[in-house]
Image (cartoon, rainbow, N blue to C red; front, side, top):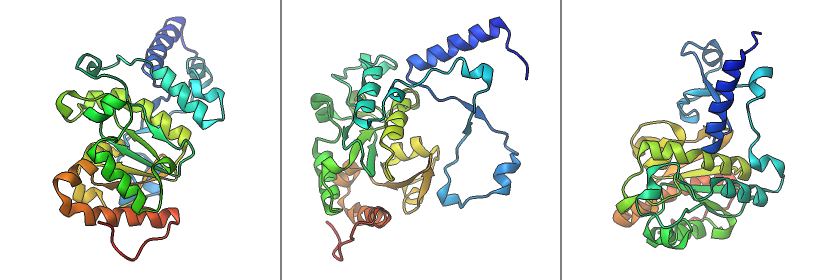
Length: 268
């Protein structure tokens, strides 16, 4: 194995330090499109997101530059989440901090949750209170959780991005890519058995799949070893209540996976 020159080592160290400041501690190498390992072990399409990268195992030289995540210092998930929030700080990594957001909306719930809901972005109520899903859409999500036989405090709730976009617009791709490493670290700490992506933005960001909701729903996806299901965002259901029955089908699929009893009567 070739030894890195001092100049390259310094350049790598500077680059890794830059990414660490962004909250990124995992590094990836693009895999060849003609990888025989993937072709030799095909997976069902519905179980595999179109991942573009594979985890890079550090060599002796590379390991010198990979800083441990702050949360690696503890085995307590509550403390680990606190360390991630501390690392996030008063984030100024994307333009949203200059576009009217009042505060960062980190996430809320049980750090040992089996079920995690991931939405799109905070709205006005969430930006005001600093907690995800507390407005009208949040009230509907609470009802959905209750219909599953759970309480809000039993699950963990977060968003793809942690700052409210101006006018509640759809988050830009760069904003999602900048903020999502912190979400990935939250997921790694919580280790839920099931993730439910609420809406197209959450689904497409997590799975790297560009497809209509009608195609994304009704399947299980493997997300870094965790099962992931896709359903409609509660805000969309407020605009189109007709889709509540379809959402309930998705939640029943999740309940069966978690071993929760499914009521005979449909939830409204």
